[in-house]
Length: 185
Image 1 (cartoon, helix red, strand yellow):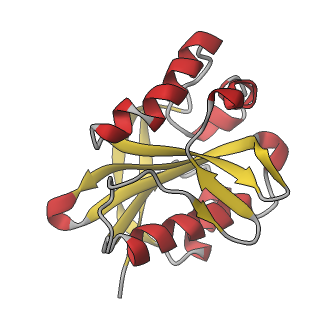
Image 2: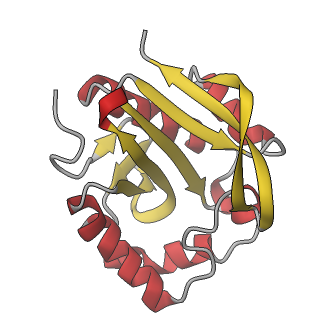
């Protein structure tokens, strides 16, 4: 098994590529970051940031933040358009002692309802569980975000009976979030 932060992941199946972003992704990332609908149910990470801040984020996410073993935020691309960023695959809050990580994703609105989020989660599960050996994945979803809940359930996540409170999701001060877990059997 590989170590999580050994090298930046480059994942691919017949439909998607998940890989490190490049400076060329700035325009597509700006479109995602400035879309209120994309941010309706998620935390404000990168929301409405300037082009300069987004460019710095691209460089930091693929460099400094990865090297510090903080998180993995990778770009999502279609195999048919491998140079066009269409979303972000997020792997963060790694807890090595309990062998657990949290995942998330944000997809450009132009690509919603095409199975891309479901496929992204499937690729992340395969990588994290089969290649890295992580035993438990978590995801947090606002109750109103029924599509994200369906994506997780399709991929074998179970909705936990408890909720957690977070600040500043979907522009709301305090929100309850549903907790979804995926455990390797």
